[in-house]
Image 1 (cartoon, helix red, strand yellow):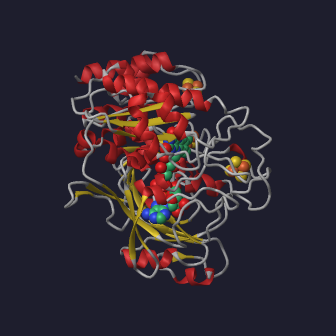
Image 2 (image 1 turned 30 degrees about the horizontal axis):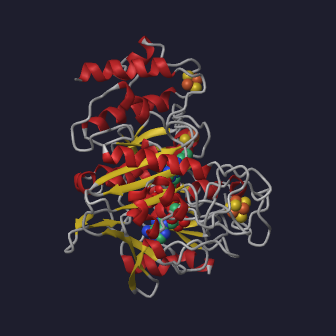
Image 3 (image 1 turned 60 degrees about the horizontal axis):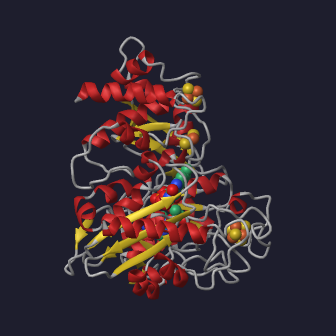
Length: 315
Length: 189
Ligand SMILES: Cc1cc2nc3c(=O)[nH]c(=O)nc-3n(C[C@H](O)[C@H](O)[C@H](O)COP(=O)(O)OP(=O)(O)OC[C@H]3O[C@@H](n4cnc5c(N)ncnc54)[C@H](O)[C@@H]3O)c2cc1C
Ligand code: SF4
Ligand code: FES
Ligand code: FES
């Protein structure tokens, strides 16, 4: 691991200014960043510890929703009584991710910004456009079973690995940030992640040093809220495919998918097809999909997972 | 501008080009410890290499096995994915603090009674994790197998298995690990 200096600021303004300095990076739970620093995939010269900023509360908003601090741990978010009651999809997605130990450290912001688990991104001996821009993509001709089928590009077919983000996408969360100059903004999660295109190393619309301060959820949607995660072992494994579903009494609802794209995947038009069943919805969700031979199974797997959830929601 | 970083308070040793170090004080198994350490030292390496508490194990060093599980401020975490400098003021419990050979914790005794291990490498992490699991269920923290998110959670075998999935046992002693934890859970009820 490369050497780094360390500071733990006590105010948002100090943190946002420190994070914008050359070579600096924020650290929250550390469960993704430290992993990548050990492999020298991430090599920050300076770490800004954001654990002292008081961003660890969940508050009710005037609009009837919730504001979740950036540093709220995944365990605490999943266990919050308001989340369990009103945003069950979020609890279910969170507890499908990682392990109890990891969820105790993992934070809301860190989870959103975790990097891909593509094996070639992790293997510094292999070409990878995301890790080393311009070096090529080893996955295109390599083992791509875990990787993306839609929203990908010629340069990168990696997926975003978060379960939590799938729920937040279906629930229309907004991500609140503060820039180095102290200016705050709110970004709908549908506009937060970028498709890889030619620049897979750029994953979100965040500017240099832009600090995530929290995530807001609009007023509860109600309805049945379910999450299905298909993976190679029953627990403590990343998704091959995951499906988040909200189905309301009037038949309207939301669908978001994980494990298939460089971001939590949602196509609003597909939700109008919910009454027609899983096949019709998946046709729209996977319009333009470009699976590889090895991961084409993800399309029928997603469709069957959605069909199972629809049946469960209606029973 | 990395040179700016040399002026940051609480940090020593950066000016002479040596890897930056920081002062940290924390409590480990009820005893205070303080020292100046390289910022790169993980909590696991602090415990094992600097302090000599070798009960916590390094299986993977990447959060994938749970052998390094310790309890920080009452919560189980992977000590390998945590920098020691980030634990200023924290209270850490390792397997050495859970119990001693002459005063075993009920979970330690149950692991012995049920043969909850073969080589024993994963066992300190399993036991630290299991202690926290029983508390998490009692506190109503839901898991992936909890069906009703609002009702009290029963300590079933299914719940214990799911919650212990972050602790891998290379020897496959899972059935006996489950039996040991279930016995303690029943005793507590
Ligand atoms: C073995 C293993 C299995 C896992 N399985 C799953 C799984 O099944 N599903 C799943 O969803 N996840 C899984 N994870 C990933 C885990 O959820 C993430 O590591 C975790 O959520 C990251 O949160 P953190 O707070 O530890 O982030 P950190 O590691 O601290 O940070 C991650 C990134 O976010 C940035 N960052 C952190 N906070 C802020 C902020 N406030 N503002 C701006 N930038 C910030 C950091 O600079 C860094 O780039 C797994 C991890 C491991 C190690
Ligand atoms: S899919 Fe993306 S992350 Fe994986 S090797 Fe290709 S460029 Fe790298
Ligand atoms: S050594 Fe920490 S999880 Fe494996
Ligand atoms: S007893 Fe050998 S790894 Fe678990």
